Amino acid sequence: MLVKQIAELKKNRNAVIAAHNYQVEEVQIIADIVGDSFALSKYCASSDSDVIVFCGVHFMAESAKILSPQKTVLLPEPDAGCPMADMVTVEALREKKKHYPGAAVVCYINSSAEVKAESDICCTSSNAIRVVKALKEKEILFVPDKNLGAYVAKMIPEKTIILWEGFCITHHKIKADEVRKARELHPDALLLVHPECRMEIVEAADFVGSTKEIIDFASKSKNIKFIIGTEMGVLYKLKRDNPEKTFYLMSQGLICPNMKKTTLKSVYDSLNEMKSKIELDDDIRVKAKKALDRMLEIN
Image 1 (spheres, one colour):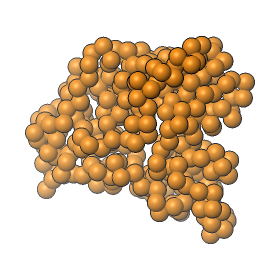
Image 2 (cartoon, one colour; image 1 turned 60 degrees about the horizontal axis):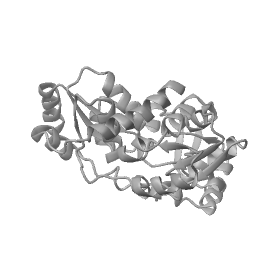
Image 3 (tube, one colour; image 1 turned 90 degrees about the vertical axis):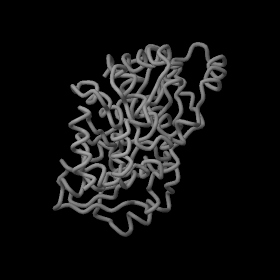
Image 4 (spheres, rainbow, N blue to C red; image 1 turned 180 degrees about the horizontal axis):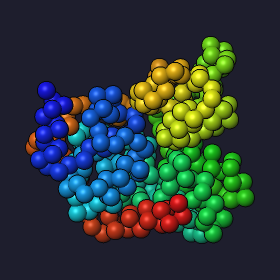
């Protein structure tokens, strides 16, 4: 019943529903598009919709609003935040910049609009290396994910990467012992992990990439067994698109509580009542868009 009601509301509101790869299955099923956060925002900006229902967390819905200021952006679960994004504030970033005046500030997409506005350029988990390589500055202040930053630093040793003490609570808790046990249980499986994992996990992997890159790699690979080292939400698409292959979640603890908050009921309520709208100060939005635009130019 809710699925039908959502479809009717979506048509009446001229809305598009975007869902991140980590969302619960029932939400992914009703979405017009499922993918990585920034790819979703770009898709929504290019659509002819008037309303964007963003099934994800707060910074993702903000990115959609930054790229589509004329559209109404709804976040079905307004308290769905990102602990890592909360680990960097504008005030703390401004203070840090004073100590490294010559450094370029590279801001991971997993951050607030205010922090993006204070940064020189944004990056995603899939283009972080490309973005940092393209910058003329040799010194880079990378915020807020120290694990992704450490991965970038390893891949670009000619640059000095200053790491922020932030991390994804879901990926960061994967331990080397879990990798060892997973390898022992599934010796013929390839290990695919997200660069938000600790360096020892990344170094043990057969492939490192964003959620989309992990999905694409597994789909194209001739191998038929995989250990997945990212949030469990990706398993739905992996299994759906590759029924002949087997996927093992590296750890049962790979769950993002905030990503799992969105339900069909919250999507329906948000669309029905047009509530939980994302609003941004125009000055912040414009500055944040410059950081995103600069990334797109490099991309």
